Length: 23
Image (cartoon, rainbow, N blue to C red; front, side):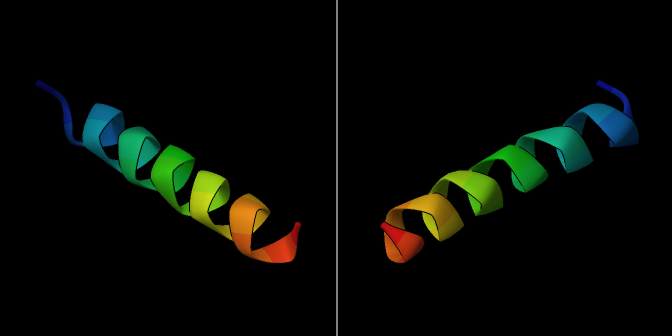
């Protein structure tokens, strides 16, 4: 797997968490 792929997954998880917290 590429580092970029892992970073994207982490970013997606962070965005989802932020969205839930903001809601």
